[in-house]
Image (cartoon, rainbow, N blue to C red; front, side, top):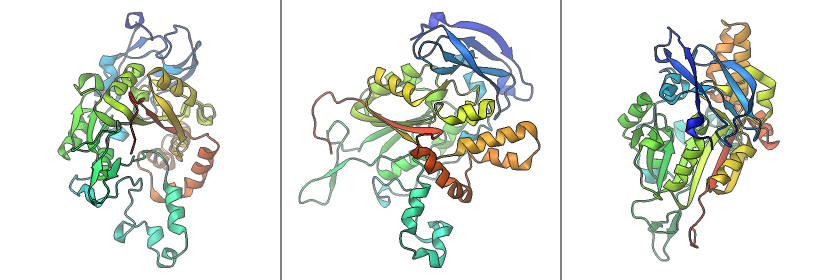
Length: 393
């Protein structure tokens, strides 16, 4: 790990009069965040293609371990200025938290209501409703593995109808298993966790999305993991969707998550895949360079090594069936040449607001890329080792 005293200020000040939150974006040079090496080579230079923060930003590859990271990067005091109010992932509004958890089958990853008006149009067309296997094919095509919902561990006592909740460490719990989501934005995944029977808590550094989640009745802390006083070995699940690439000291955060998990607890998260073909093919227009917000660009190999070093085991890496990166990258390439192109602007909205028809049409391509392990996004699960032998539910 690089020592903080080795971090050198770049004294580079970026100003953008059209973006008040980025009036003073100061960058600093750093050593490799994963191995601490001071030697790295520039591999990509790009602008902020999504939020318009002025300046050019550099991605470097560590000469020692190969990790790619933004260097120089924003100092911690300026990180908030990289996320304007129109930042896409912060725009969604959580559903009202009013429906009872018992109405949802615990452990189901399918959040679509296939009865009545909730059924997709394709399955509401009368002749198609009775085609054998069509519903199963539809569910398979539309399952992109982006935010799986783990089942609540339960054990039913013989001769009783009630079920007892079993924590990840094998102990019974009256309040049910506890889950924590890092970077929960406005709380849509927290709603799904609560509906499935989890006691869910969220952490969100953005004040606006955190306030939206709190107004929806969700238990959300505004800040970072380091700022929140959470009990050690308390959570059965920690989730983080497209979060770790934003965190300056990702090793420290993973070690903190390891301490928060109960023995046997699960870490479930997603990251962009910088090891696939997309980054090379699209170059500076790759949608998920997303400089200056993405500080790290992980590959399956680098994230596995980091998780092992932080004490995790049973690491499973799945390639998402998701081509949002490709759509966004094509949009950026089009807009770079034709800035007023309406089609390009429509494509650029897709990653944050995917349409049903487009997602369905692109699903076969997404499945093929995931099958050959070239998906642009990864969903990863890892576990904190058990401290003692227990019988898992």
